[in-house]
Length: 167
Image (cartoon, rainbow, N blue to C red; front, side):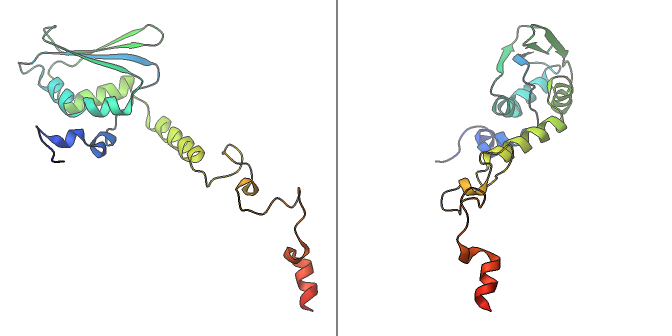
């Protein structure tokens, strides 16, 4: 299927996964108010065009809304689970400055993202076993030898009996 439209790269999974901004779990609603014309809203328009899809992909639990031509200056409003409202002024800021401001106020830290990735990688991989994994012991995998503490190994598989047979 050919990629058509303006900048079709924005609709690929690879592009959506490259987003660096993850909203915290306590953010419920995220709205952007901007104007379609004017230099003050240029950064907000660029943010919506290039980064809003990535933000939606990385934070599926958040309701994201855009409002056009309702306010004289562009702004971002967010409502948290606790009922608090966070308002950020993005007047005359470019796309990168908006990303940094959102990351600082509403985004997850790098340490939090790294910890979540470790937990996800540890629990999702069926090859891992031990405390905190899907299996406590390798003997629970079909086709493996049972634990010697539960069922004794056959004598030919034990080291001392092998050595005695060789002599």
